[in-house]
Image (cartoon, rainbow, N blue to C red; front, side, top):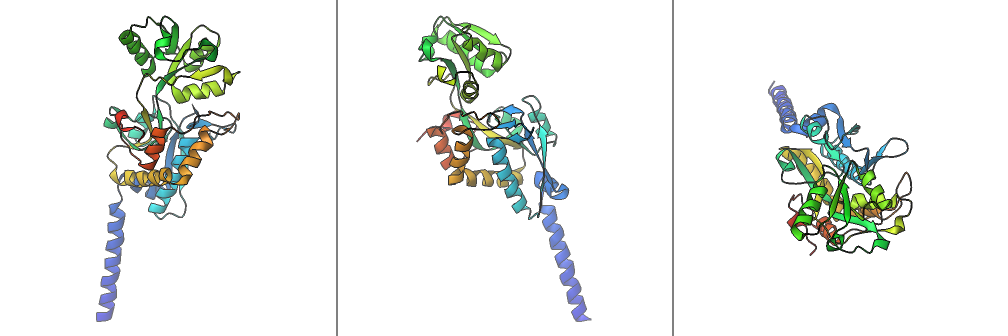
Length: 305
């Protein structure tokens, strides 16, 4: 009887331990464990971060990073298999869909800033962009001051047109600022000589140049209208346990040789579906960031050492 009682107590202890382990999971990890699925938010045309290929499948630099995070989550939860669900998001819907639990990770080109961190969290920075201008090489426009008295276009409703307006006033440049309805229209204005330059995120300018009829005819400025702005994979705010797994996965990737290889795959080589090459080697600032990963929203913290 005593022996049976001890077996009973041991069984009860094992059950309690299993229940305690189950209770330790909270938030996103708990939901993933219970459903056996994780949902990735993706963009349709954010080249080369997250966009659709010819088969309407989301691919890109940020998507590859997210799949590395999925592997880490699967390992953390000791799951034999983990279903990956894909949910499209836009600039307008990405934060609401994250907040209401529709998506667990947002895999795109979302800027990590202090204002957004009031609503969502970000993992370690995977890219640094800045607001610059593209112009024709034949125009010989080498600096922001060279834009004096010229017509310059930017996209309506962006931070870029705000930065252009502020620089115009601060430097007394007398620029004729044109507001385009979208990026394609703005680039077309430079292409057809209706504007001398187009101000936008440098990586977006690189993708427009790569996709143009004559990529060699354009140059992107070294001068920038902004400090480096970090992009990060977005996750829900106040989910400490999930963020720990996500941060661990991204830090391991970026610090390994695979991080540089993954960057080169999307930024210095031909990418599907059209074989474009963005010709954007990794910056000294991002190389330093990969060596010491950070989720800081502060542009001043991203300086090449």
